[in-house]
Image 1 (tube, rainbow, N blue to C red):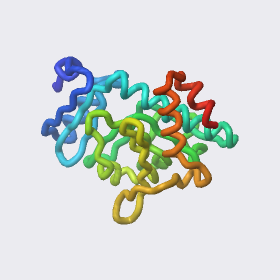
Image 2 (cartoon, rainbow, N blue to C red; image 1 turned 180 degrees about the vertical axis):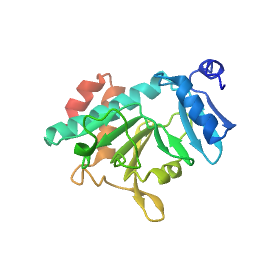
Image 3 (cartoon, rainbow, N blue to C red; image 1 turned 90 degrees about the horizontal axis):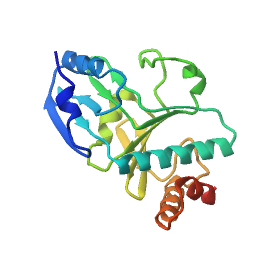
Image 4 (cartoon, rainbow, N blue to C red; image 1 turned 30 degrees about the vertical axis):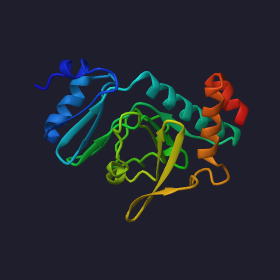
Length: 204
């Protein structure tokens, strides 16, 4: 049995990579139960894990709340979740910081589990990277249309194409909104002393 205890003892902000079979990865996920840490990523026979920091949690909340504010302003339906483990059996597993179903919200609303064999992937996956944990190419097997990568005050949007992910200036789901600019404005307001909710309200 693979023990979760040594992994739980990793300090905040740490990242570790170890060789592991798919069966061992599945056992580790099962042993973790409902705990959301550490975050796990499995690809090419290796498990990579990270222990999120307080800063990581703050940035994750800010970008997720910004997306919600835009969707609510546009009076659009959606499903959001965090954390969630997405898997392609025998190949890969990943745990985005946030997932949003926008166009496909009705297909997953009310479900207790997501099975990518029958359910659509999230339209948007959000990754906050304060420890160089994220590799955009890890998302290719999951066919998620967009991955939003946050590093500090910068937000980059990556859109899935036949050859992989390409960075784009705008989101396919918010064509009229300059998402990276809005995020920078929010972060600037927070740096000046505004609370994140007030900072988001100030740019809407």
